[in-house]
Image 1 (cartoon, rainbow, N blue to C red):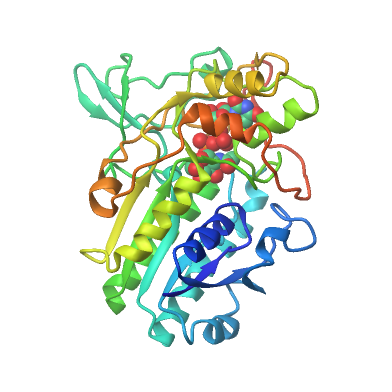
Image 2 (cartoon, rainbow, N blue to C red):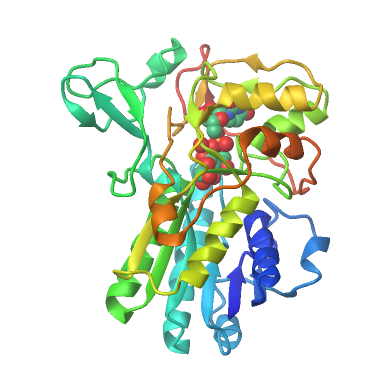
Length: 366
Ligand code: UD1
């Protein structure tokens, strides 16, 4: 197959490009080299591929690139929590308008197969069960309670403690940040395109991706890169909340594998199929910090409390549906993945100011 990979010079897109070529596919990469994640030039590891520097919102460019393409793997996006609402136009522009232009161009070019990067952020909080009320959807956490160190969401009906479980693909979707809202809008646009044009979409809801080529710490980076960058400076990783928040840290090569399998699987039955892409081995953020500190022989993590506006407590999922539909199973374990990540090549983006954090001295949020 010949596949257009948007965001193909990026953290995940570049691994997808390598994996596709190693399986005998041909790729053309489109990347805008956004300054949030890139330096001024295309990364060296993209030089072996056909790379077009350009914006996914450029319909004319897309029209030319889609001429001899069998499927599109859409990774181009602005990611991360961001700084504050001034980021919203950029998230909506790159992620939503960009996806809309891509879908229209695919329709015009007669390309009907899309694999797209979605995210577990579309769920908002993960899955919670109340002993009395069953599965419940706790709302956003109260900044005043966060500032007092109450991090666990409570039952919205009776206020009791909740049990955290695995979030399924058909869970209620309740994005909590501008980025999350833009990822859900991408899914809605793609699902509408399927209904209108009859195409096929695998929407891969990535959990917390880490690994080589991850951008260094910026407001747009994931926690693994933030911890790794702190340790490189000789500083302790700063763990928010109490460090017991659960995530599924999934290695970037496994995420690339899930994309390759979705592209090779062909048409998604029913047209639009969302899938959790995760390792199935949840870990706490505190465990990640400790493992990385040990692997880098650095200072022990410091638990600092607080939470950023829009932060959620636990999000973990079962990889079962991706395994049954795509044959996907993560291959890189947490210990091996973190040990490799301790010395892996990171990407050097232009840094900027950090996001607002609710701390014990400032409970206002942003
Ligand atoms: C992350 C990504 C999101 C991605 C999703 C699924 C970011 C910023 N967020 O959401 O883009 O779509 O996974 O892959 O890239 N934390 C600390 N110390 C810090 C920073 C964060 O302890 O310095 C904690 C946070 O409180 C949070 C956890 O780490 O509990 C994870 O944060 P983050 O990496 O931003 O990820 P998510 O919000 O889970």
